[in-house]
Image (spheres, rainbow, N blue to C red):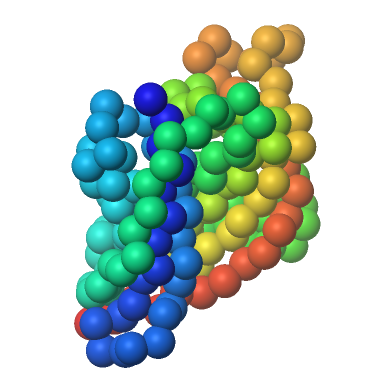
Amino acid sequence: MRYKVTWTMYFTDSNIPDTIAVAIVEAASVSKARYAAYKQMIPDRGYRFEWFINETEVEKIEMENEHMMHKLKILPQYFEDKLQGMKKWEVRKNDRPFKDGDTLQLEEWSEETGYTGRLLQEYIKKIYTEAPGIKEGYVVMNTEYISASYREKRE
């Protein structure tokens, strides 16, 4: 079953809502949907964010016309190319339900430093899975820049 999980998140040292997050996940129950959404949305990879989650809402949804956000790592040299508008595509393993209209959240990452805190969001305009030169099990996505941001790491 697919669920849409919506909640308001606060930093523990603040009473002001920081983020309203939405995640679409596959899960067998509401509690498992909450957990899957939490793992998808909360950056626990090298960040020391402390979140207080309030006002959780979970609903079953039909996914025919819904779009997902896919969080992915991206190496620094490719991140820069995307920022400068030189790379308008992504080649990835086809290990997720990518589809036209979805959003990619690309988080800059390197083996030496881990996550840098720099993020890009891109819209998937068109997906190609079967064309000359595309290796089996991979997908080529034509993407369009939406926004860039920086999330400072906390120590």
